[in-house]
Image (cartoon, rainbow, N blue to C red; front, side):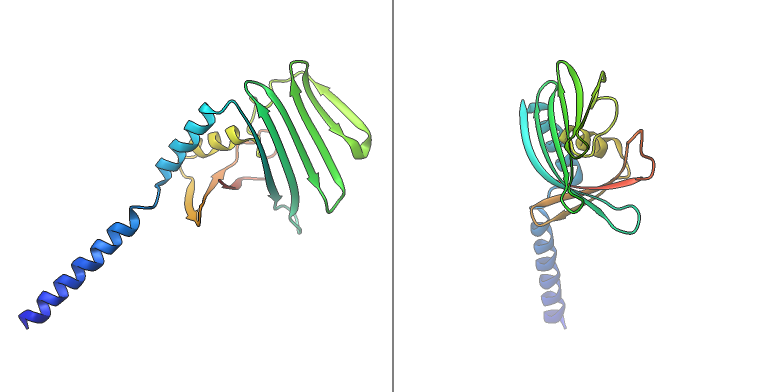
Length: 167
C-alpha cells in the first residue's frame, strides 16, 4: 500500500511539474497589453494590412484595409469592399483630413483632429487604447496570435457594442 501511495504522490508531483512548465511559455493579458503599449509608443511609422469584418444585419461586411502612418499625424487609410466594388481613402496631412470616394467621384475635406477625437477600428494605436481602457476585456491566445474582445469606443456608431481584435 505504501508503494502505491508513493507512486501516486510521484505521479501527482510529475503532473503538477508538467502543468507549471507548460504555463511558463504563455504570456498573460497584462504582458501582452504592456508589450502593445510599448510598441505603440516606440514606433515612428508603420504600414499594415488587415481584414475588417463588420457583423451587423444578415450578412457580414468584409473590408480589406491598408494603413500607412508616420508620426505624429500623417495617415493614409485605404478601405475596400471587393464584394460591392467600393473603396475609400482617408488622408490626414498638415492641410487637414480628406476622404476620397472614387466610386462616387467625390472628395471631402475636414478640419478635424481625427483620429484623436474617437477610436478608429483600423488604427493600431486606437486598438491598443481600446484594449487598455476596457477592464472587462476578454483575452485569449491562439497559435501565435493574441485575441481581445473589448467594448467599442466609437462616438458615431453605437450599433457596434463590442469588437474582436487580433494582434
